[in-house]
Length: 370
Image (cartoon, rainbow, N blue to C red; front, side, top):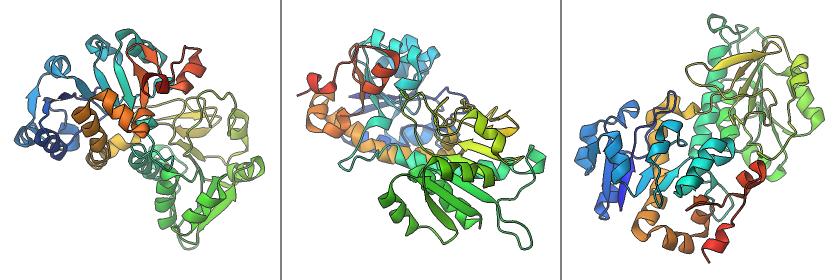
């Protein structure tokens, strides 16, 4: 199979989907890899490294036109729509339920869209999402450290335990990979950390991994309000179902928060768990609602591009190899977990959440591949 790795064009997206060692694995299996010039530059990988690994470096048009599978990091942007064609495999973080225009283009062009974020494993976890989630959680706490500084417009709080000074409180919503990432750093800095979740088993497992300055609370309205009142930073780490109309934190709730407190929305679902969340970029990362700073960058891991690219390439490569070695149809039939990542197939929408949100016709993937 001919596989193409284009350079990401999303605002301040420095990651690359495939690192040189991954190229070498694909080439060893007999596949041809095209990498766009400077695609890896933002992550510290040169064209020469890709060529040494066996890739052909080329311009953007060549990468898209030659390839049977496009191996990316982020969703397809408007400037890339012209490259879509029937039968082309798109393997990336698609997030179709957040991008209606893109979804309609994917359907119109009859591509095969496979989303990293929807692929599961036998335990119901999301193996291609978790490495980036951990980075996003840690990056979220580092953002709190940055924007807590007076010189960066903050209240002048150092999120750290200092003798003779009140210890800051950091509340984290969600005990998944991103929540644990945020908690690990926040706790290691000596903050008072509160984690809210609804899964007792998950909280018990997390409790064994984190230090004594982390408190675990069941996520209900009473406990959430307590956290809103007491916290210097709220870090949201739960994905919100796009079909839901309610929220966990409403705009009115911001009025009970401390003056100078902040919300770091790692999940970054516009109008999701945090009603006042709207996606921002690394270029323009923060805004204020009711005097509360909001940081809602939707590609936090890009700030740590080399670490993120290595992690992403390592965890996606085995799935890319399945697709390339067997072709989509056979790979889907043999791996039901890979099939869960199918967003659209030759004009048919196969992701239920997107169909429900936008009122589009759904074709269950099981009807396509028995």
